[in-house]
Length: 180
Image 1 (cartoon, rainbow, N blue to C red):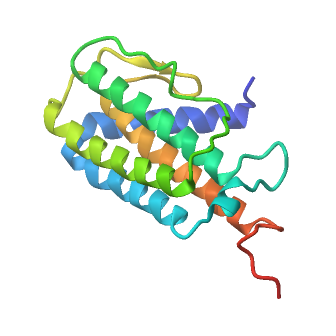
Image 2 (cartoon, rainbow, N blue to C red; image 1 turned 45 degrees about the vertical axis):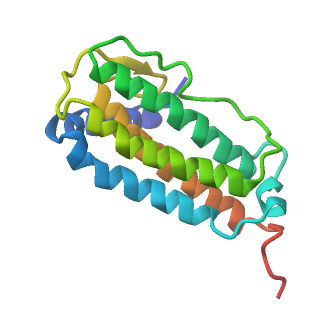
């Protein structure tokens, strides 16, 4: 159960997603979404597999686990945006993939995230610029969101996890840290 403060923040974010999504077309939202993806990709530049596999604590995610989570989430969110834009019901069950390890090299995950960003950019060309605000699909924290609100959610998701990656890189003991 969320605290009243957390619920208020989630309600604020939901209002932002809905209002901005109703105000702007996909093409107008695209620069914000792509900038977030580029910033995410920048946070992965130069990260080695040893650094990507490292975690500050057993309960904290590694960079590689975070990258895989973002990739799976992003693919699910894109399918959901496409379905909702077409007036179909969408499946939001894959939006919050659990923590999962992978043997994939971090550079492969980075390339997949880049390619996924390109697919997001291309996908809007096949969507109506201003799809209806119904149907919607539920998010566990933000409630019912329409297609463009989900599109904006992906931007925030990328930025949140970019911050998570930066926190791992700044943590004490991170393999990429040069001892002074």
